[in-house]
Image (cartoon, rainbow, N blue to C red; front, side):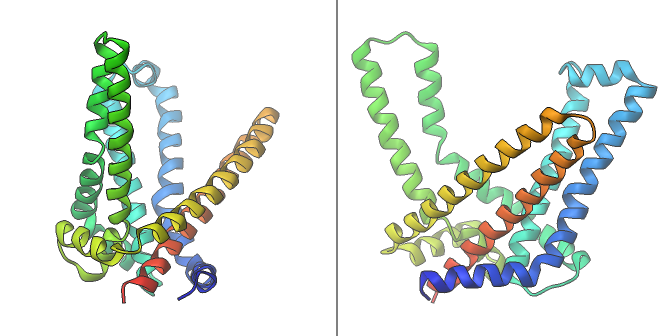
Length: 254
């Protein structure tokens, strides 16, 4: 499958799956957001001291609960979009029910991906907490750059792991190994596909942020317009990105 066909299939998939994508965002992103806003309004009226403790980062248990709920819905939403990209299911109820089964494995995959960058975090902590000679700092910087390159290289090899996880219903380790096998010999091609996607995303996000900043200057009712624009851009770019990667995966897995 050529690149032009990948792009054509991506937009075709987006058109065909738009209805279920919108339903998914409505229930797992928009509705929870407005419920949270409503909860904060009620707290401001009935328990202002409790709300102040949350906003000032003093009520740690309540803040932790909010963050846990937020990340739960965030991951569930991502699971649903990945599931939608690989299936023709039109029902949100079925999509949500089937995708949630992959929650633990999906979280495990992202934890494993994050673990690739642990050495970089350790280097950052080391250099920020200890006074080192300039030569040592230079050597550590070179080491950090090497580790960044190796971590990114490995991360790209894992690009298709999440799709394999859903499609073949196997373990995280199996999905990573198969993703490496598919991408082996095609790493440069995948890298440029990803780079192109990131450049397009960066341009569109930058333009949308400029528009949002102009809208926010107006204040009042336009805050809702800003939220609508932010949500629309998020829906389109996130969905297109996942569908784009799914079509690259489909073109290379065979």
